[in-house]
Length: 115
Picture 1 (spheres, rainbow, N blue to C red):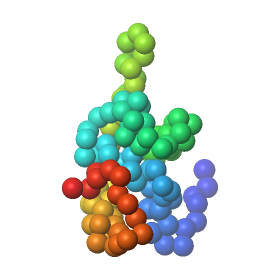
Picture 2: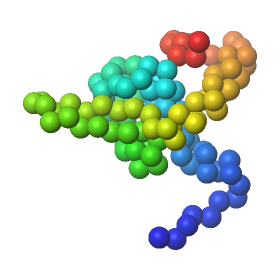
Picture 3: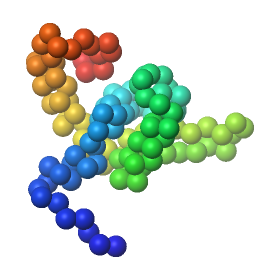
């Protein structure tokens, strides 16, 4: 498999956690621990089922999230951060701090995950 060429290291990071939802999924799992699909969907209430499924698959492919399927009836699936995923938490914490300091009057916070 050919390696993807990148301009700099920041591009690697943004390709793994870029977009609106991936950082929120990672931070939520980091703060709250192992969660089922429905719990993640409930927290990120504006995300569609299809988008959440896609984002979780991408994060699993990058070894950021671990997906565990239990042989229950009905099947139970849980998601948790991998050790690699946990290394992203300090970056996301800095993003929380920056966002809090720079929110100003343009934004209205509806959920406060960053405490």
